[in-house]
Length: 409
Ligand SMILES: *Cc1c(COP(=O)(O)O)cnc(C)c1O
Image (cartoon, rainbow, N blue to C red; front, side, top):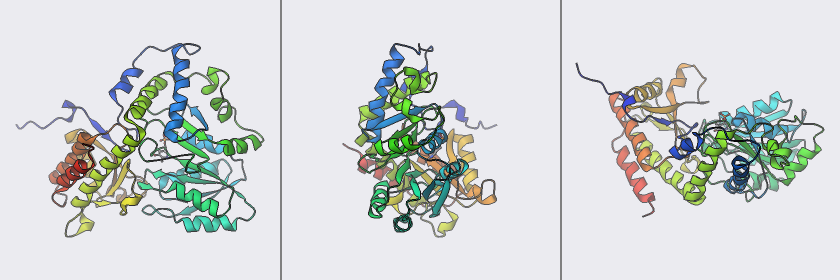
C-alpha cells in the first residue's frame, strides 16, 4: 500500500486573515509564570508599550488598551463618542463596515450606510454630497474601515478626510485599522483621523485578546460631552492612568503584554517603512501568481481576484473566487494534504449557501516573508493540479519575479 503524506509531519501554516502567524519570540516571551501585577517589570513594560503603539499608529495623542478582541474596540470607540439618537455615516466596501454599523445600531445610534458593494472602493463624491446636505450637522461621525478583510479592498482614509473637510463638516472621522495596522501604510495624525481601532492578532502578531482605541483631542472633547459612559469602556482612565489598574480596568492581560512587547520590538526593529514595504512586495508576488493562474480561455472557470484594481488591494489579505464548490474543495485539500490552511470567504456570498463555497481568502499579514509566501503559492498551485482546477501556467515564476524585483539587494 502506498503511504500518503501526513501534514502533521511538518509545521502547519495558518494563512488566514487573522489570527496571523505568531513569531516564536512572541510565543517564548509568553511562556512564563504570572508576574506581579502591582509593581515591577510588568508596570514598566506596559509604560513602554504606549509610545511604541502610538508610533505604529502615527499619532502623538492617546491610546486606550482593552482586554477584548476587535469587536470590543469597535464598541469602545462608539461608546466613547456617541449616544443613542446620534447619527453616523458609514461608507461600506465589505462585511466589516456592515458589522461595525450593526454594532452602532444595537447601541441606539442612527446608522446611514452608503453601500458600495464588495468589489469597489468608496465613491467619495457621494460621501461629500451627503455631508454637504447635512446642514444641521446631525451626523456625528463617519466610520471608515481602512482594509475591509472580507473583500480585501483598501480604502483611502486621507481622501475621506479631504472629502469631509471639503464639505465643511465637523463629524469625527473614525477608522478601523484592525487588518491594516502594521501592514499597510497608515498615518493617523497626518491623515486627520480622530479615532482609530486596532487589535493585536493581525499585523501585531500576538494571540487575540488585546485591542486598542487611539483618539485625539477632538474625540476626547466628544467623550467629555457625553452625559454618562460605562465605567469599563471609558477610555479616559485607560489613556491617562493614575494607577496601573486603570490601564486595563482591572487585572492586566499579563502574558499578552509580554508577547506584545516583543511583537512591537520586531516591528520597530525592522522599521515601520520596511514592514510596509515587505507587505507590499509580498502582496505583489501573490497578485502576480493569481493573475497568471487566472489567464485561461474561460476565465470564469478559474481563479479570479475579488479586487481587480491593484491600487485598491490590501497588502495584508487577498479575497479570491473559484467556481463553487471548488474554493472549499481547494481549502480542504490543502489542509488535509499539505498542512496549509486558507481563509474562508466572508461576506461575498450568503454564509452556508452553495455560492459561499466559491470564495476564499489568503492572509499575508504580520510575520510573513518571501519563502512563506512562495510556500503558500506553491501549495495553492499543487492543490489546483491535484483537483484539476484549470489555471494558467507560470504563476510561481511570476511570483518569483515580483519577489526578486522587490528585494532590497
Ligand atoms: C478581524 C477584523 C475585525 C474583527 O476583529 P475581532 O478581533 O475578530 O473581533 C474587525 N474589523 C476588521 C477590519 C478586521 O479585520
